[in-house]
Length: 299
Image (cartoon, rainbow, N blue to C red):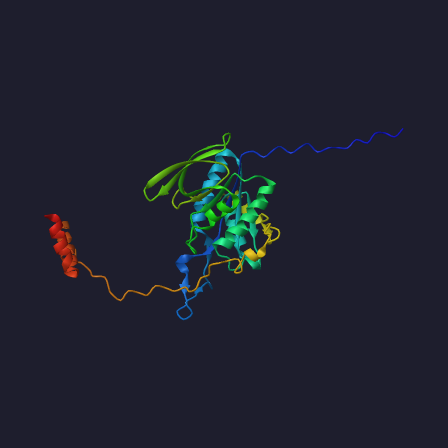
């Protein structure tokens, strides 16, 4: 009789625990060193260093704090040219666990609508490996200043969006709930939401950590996952790039310098009261009607 064949079965992998967080970051030119061409009125990017969008760093730090407290992993995701891999490695050096870059020539010229479309496809592809609990973004980017990509992703993915968040008060993994503080024009709102959700973080909401030596070495050796449009799950590339962008930048220009110079007030040897009187006299001299308005209001 033939001996029975015994197959060696691999033990099942333990289910992942903790949070699965994805932080969307963007590589942007350092705005402090951007110049506008005086003739063509276009941005001169040659020789301008690139950085991680500063608002995204606060989002990354908050994601890392949650991972450190509740466990799990943090993935950084970016859409851009191949050179955007540098920004992802910097994020890995700060402590992120994984990095994914979606890059394709068909993405060039994408506005916020097309960008949110491509990023949503990549996030959906990542979620097939493991459901995403929280998507983080900065409140906006310093090169576009629209604050539209984060909400656009939330709308496309059907996520609760918590924008302009200044602090995360609590997180309950068992109940899949989160409580945050959101800054608004009227003060601060305290919001409670179910997971999964998307959070856009404000600036100066935390202190960005320094990467450890181990993280910096790991970032230098790490494999950054690079996806084309198809690999990212973009079903219709025509919705990306210039073809998929209903808005375009018509013109970029530097503001004209003011011809009027500031008027200096001498304060040496004067008391605070005398300085205040001098300023008031200058204001009244500049706008004679103002004195009458102030005098009438004081009666």
